[in-house]
Image (cartoon, rainbow, N blue to C red):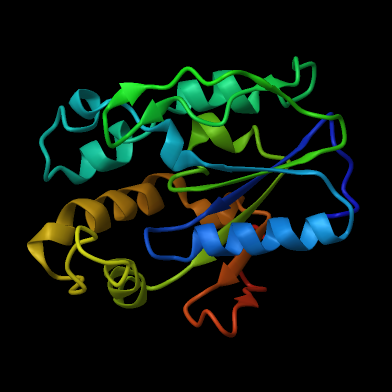
Length: 209
């Protein structure tokens, strides 16, 4: 990845389910690339949610609503991915919504340097409307039996550690819908098995690897 050309910015996705370890993986990747002298722009797709009314328009328990309505992918493209892509202005924003207050954010635009590397972690990043915008991508493969308790261990408010709990139906069902419709491993540049955080490994037989 360090040797790949940027046109003008190399845009990289780190995709996977809740609890897959996306943020940690992306942070560590960014740190490694900075040590090699690359300028890295680090962003989370969690800062590009739709407002609450849109996210829950199909109900708070809807798997389809979780998959289809959680994220403002048009906003992600308009304010971040397109400006950093070929012919883009290099003027970008790293967030458009405060998900806690449910209020839009109007942060000042930043200006990227040509040759920089953008790393975005988040859910559903290989959806059809996004996958052609990545110059490279990583999908973290993690079983729900591992990812759900790992996510719940973050603390109160992060759900039950039991994958079969009713409170997890929306999230697991939404991800399964994503897998069924999109087959993210087919499109990922690299698939990494991240079930063991201490021993991740590249899945050589994945469709996109």
